[in-house]
Amino acid sequence: MLQTPAAHTIQRELEERGIGCVVYDQPQSEPTDVQCDEGAKFCKEQEVELIVALGGGSVMDQAKAMSAIVTNGLSCCQLDNVSIPKRMLPLICIPTTAGTGSEVTFVAVITNTKAQYKMTIMDSDHLSPDIALCDPALLATLPPRLIASCGIDALTHAIEAHTSVLANPFSSALALHAMEMISKNLKRCWSSHSDMQAQEAMLLASTMAGAAFINSDVGAVHAIAETVGVAYHIPHGTANSLFLPYVMEFNRRGNEHCYAQIAERLGGACKDSDDVENSRRAVCFVQELIEKLEIPHFSDFSQVNPDDFEILAERAASNPMSYDNQKPIGKEDYIQILEDAYQNKKNLSLSTDMKEESIMSKIQNKPVCREAYVEKVRGAMHYRAQWLYLLLDEAKKRGADWEEIARAATSRCGCFQGAGLYEDWTDHTSLKSFAEVFADEDFKKYFDMEIVESTESSLQIKFHHCPLVAGWQAIGCSDEEISKLCDIAMDGDRNIANSCHLDFTLGDTISNGAPCCELSFRPKE
Image 1: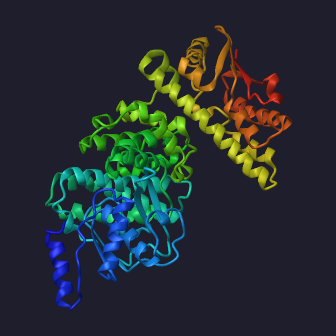
Image 2: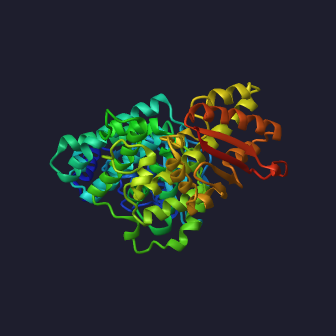
């Protein structure tokens, strides 16, 4: 970067105006606390009064950290997760990549070399750059691999800003527009260095995505990407690319409308499809885009060891960014994401050109779709369990009529309608196929359940650890309240399940803390 025309121009312009300058050319990819402390020492020795950061996100983040160290007299690690007492040195950021958006954020991500994790140095008052100069001509010499990984980094910022629990109309407006610009221009920018219009659009989209997530937050993609990036020394943009589709698929179930919006902005939505199908298209579009940009797969990195996945998942789950993810996410979820990424699973949300067919016909006629259906049921049940108990928790805290709220929440969708359990229940054959889903070993293991009875005319299953009941126990509901909630929720299901009888019975051991229950189904005559 020191030998580029841009660097020479900045030096010449300053010197012609009688402004003394010194050059610090030590910044490297993925800056560390040690590098930041050394850079701050250099600034103090040279009596630096203003910093111009010319480079990508690593350079700009290191410049922020160095500037704050100088003015506050602290070490880099002492700035981790605290309010910074004094404003950093004046800082001008000139991005040379279209990805991080660091030129408009008040965050610096720095690796703690001793603890081996990425610190988030953040302060909205004292760590914001004073000026951001965005010139698309500076992207002209970037190699395609950097254009690709940085572009997906920007796309990740936009998607997570829009889907975070802290998303708001302002952040989503920026994020959605950034997605559209990235979708239309990233491949063009990657394919040709001479496409100045595409480069300008990508630089603007990157800045908008940065402004979006700093007014919202990022989530599970960044939590796992930062963890893996430190462990295996994988650049941040590439690490985001490895996990973005898999986290999208995890978050999508239960948030289909949000992801249908994303599909629309990416250009992957179908006007004749519903939110569920278009949410699938969003995931498939992103996965296909990453493939077309020839970004490496997780398993392509020789240093990756599946034996590390458990500890990596644990670290990611404890990352504060996980708390702002669109859905609650824990260690076991991250292990699954790591394994899926390592196996390079394709068609996460089924094919984007999948025809509209009934769920049951897919199971009966296409065994390959049965696995997808099992996953769909499992994900939707888990999501509705979390959603319902969080809703009730908030209602109880506010002294609201929680029974009325529960009835309103489940009257049209019940507990299981989101999983598509009532589609096409027209005969005993459908019931038999449905029983096969519950007989799936992974399904039974996930829910700690067993089939009590399965005949041509009835199905009875027992959940030893019902997610709904467990959630209500977790927020302190009494046995009486849980029983009432179950009746209310099942009323919603009974209203929907026109072609089957449905009964729900709480287990006898609920008073001892065991969240078990039984469900029975039988087709109506």
